[in-house]
Length: 205
Image 1 (tube, rainbow, N blue to C red):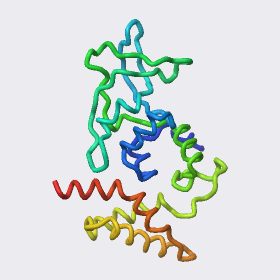
Image 2: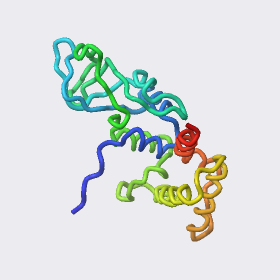
Image 3: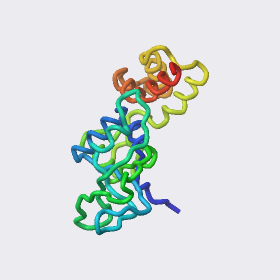
């Protein structure tokens, strides 16, 4: 039996795939490059009752997602767009009066939006999708990198610089590549920077 592909990616999955801060993802959503959605049991928007999946405005999430190195936190939003309703318009939450509470791990990007964004910006090599969607096989095993990266952090600890960690991962790519090939250092740094920064911040606190 072949299972269907996943329908949503969390913003944390997108952060790891693209190697950019969460605040950048919020900015791209505000620019309508893709949608950010969440699920709500029930909110009242004037005369309408809304439940289920709703689209959120990227600018409403900047305080939640923060900036690079600042942990994501919950926030209240007052604007929603019903996701499954045809020609849905932006609605303002009137009940609860304080707005809809959204947790960072309850914030998703529809898979269709994510795949379209990756294809438009030539990010297919980091999508981890199987070849049955017609895309090229990734040149480098980015998905396979994360397990040895975790092992390296567990055995060696968090390095003092991002370059040290990127160099260790470049050595891993060379070791597993039949031709001894590896991504350039700048690409590796971009992909692992969010994780390294979060670990560095946790160690300093």
